[in-house]
Length: 201
Ligand SMILES: *[C@@H]1O[C@H](CO)[C@@H](O)[C@H](O)[C@H]1NC(C)=O
Image (tube, rainbow, N blue to C red; front, side):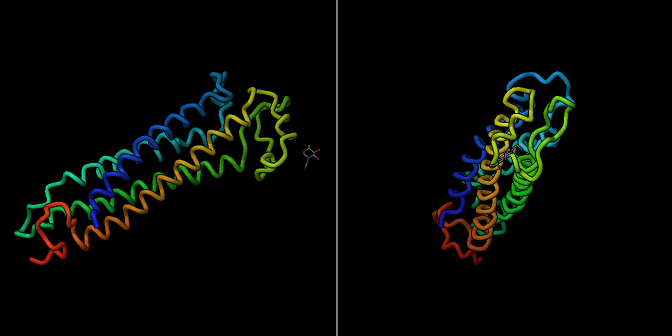
């Protein structure tokens, strides 16, 4: 099992996802694609930075660590050829857990935001006119929002993207937790081409 190679490919996938999540969160600050005339008019969940912090910044660390695992020096410590690599795989579990936390935050936030619906101007004021996702199955209700234009599909599609992408990130980080466990227990056999992988001194 080539655990270092797996980690590298996970890292390569996490980076574009993190960039896309950050972009989606930034776009949400522009309701309906326009500059909001008042910060109070932006849906609250956008301000919790699920895409920028959770799936963006927090994901950069595990992604970089996973990318580096393949090139880690594994032939180094205590006369144990695989223990340097093992330590790298072990620490990757911690970073994978950080990534899981960030992606989970973004995932839950997006689910809440989709269920709650966007904040919009109903003619009488700026409120959340929908409850329990009732607008998802009834497009007639969308007309309740008079402005910003297209706020409902705008928020719905961006939060759905965030939901899907953070879900994928969470799965990938979950895979690395398992992969890291294997790497810690078995060593990364292909790395040196030297040891049996059981790591006995
Ligand atoms: C959708 O919402 C409108 C407005 O509240 C309501 O009149 C209509 O019956 C609803 N349609 C469905 C299919 O629930």
